[in-house]
Image 1: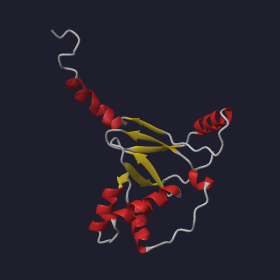
Image 2: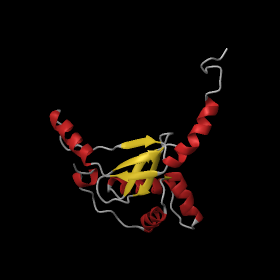
Image 3: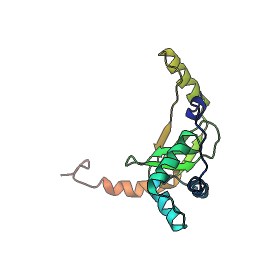
Image 4: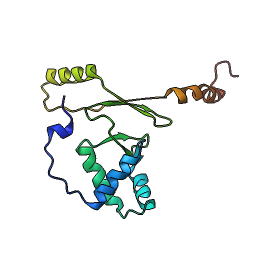
Length: 157
C-alpha cells in the first residue's frame, strides 16, 4: 500500500523564506497544531507569513507526506511533522490530543485485499483510532460519575 505522495508525482516545490519559516515552526512543534495557531506562532516569532500562505504551505507539506493531518473534534485540520517516514496510522486522545503513531501491517493487508475484492486500484487510506489516553481515562471516572446523577439515573423518582 503506498502513500499519496508515492502515488502522485509532485511538481518541484519552490523553497521560499515563508516555506522555510513554516517548516522550522513545524519542526519545533511536538503536538498537532491548527493553521491559525501556527500562523500566530510565526507572527510571535517575528516571521511575516500570511495566513493564506500558511494554509497553502501546510497543504503542500501534507500532500508531500511531510506532515500528518488529523481532523479535530470541530472538523478543523490540525498538523504535526511526521515522526515516522513511512505510512502509518494514529491513536488519538479525544480529550488532550495525545497521539501515538502506529504501524499496522494487518490493516495494510486488509485494505489491499478489500480494495482488490471490489476492483479498486491506487487505493489510499487513513486510520485514526480515537479514545481516551491512560492519563485522561484515570481522570474520567470522577468526571463521568457526576454526569450520571440526573433525573435519568436508574431508581430516580
